[in-house]
Image (cartoon, rainbow, N blue to C red; front, side):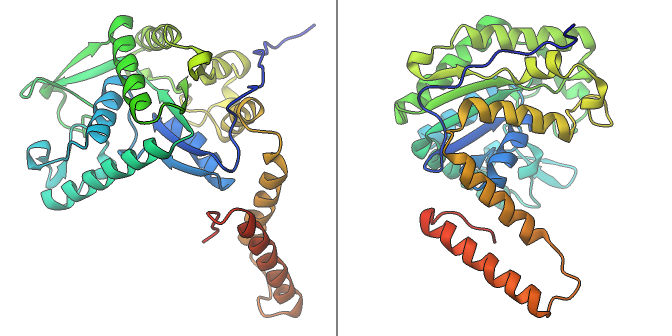
Length: 317
């Protein structure tokens, strides 16, 4: 008797990722989990220049800004608890002064712009359909920055609104990079603070909207990270201590599924070599000046040099 559901996967025949690819990740913290894996294996990647973004309208807004080169000004900044923030971005970009924040925001805008122009693949992970409207400015925000709840109204984006936003986002990206492959996912992180039922409604709206736009012939795809977590890893041992986020084991499992579908088979040998070098670099010798360790370092340097001769962008610094 089979006690486990397995989601069937078909390897992509075209447009897979290799070491010539450039991947851009946008979205929730799960997007960063996948970007960390890509980064570990030394693929070229850009991850969330504006920080973690949970809902599609926040992504659409910042991608629109980047493509249209609409620079941030002081009007886009707000001082909260002696820090300058932007309601359009994550708190990761906060700063001590407005000028420092503007510089950081416009640097992220340029990084996003360049990433989208050069990308072979863009991976977008959506986290929620719930959004917050800043009452005084009547604008939907990307992050509330721990501002008191009374300053916001909470709203649920419907399927049509999400679809329209994602359609606009896709068209914007395709305008500047028609050949890019778009991969949408829904974050497996449950937003329990919204409520169990509310989280289910939120994820359902995201999934429904995305599937109205998936078209492999136009290089628009869906990867079922959420479904893997819910159906293949439906045991709490696959969750972190908060019982909400995936554990390291679960992240690695989903990464392996992603790899089996989206990474070219010829990347396997290079990834194994990168992994071996990463582990060797993490090794802490008992006798750093010993002859054996110096020989070990010399051999390791040689392996790194050979790898860099093939892919000059790879760096272990």
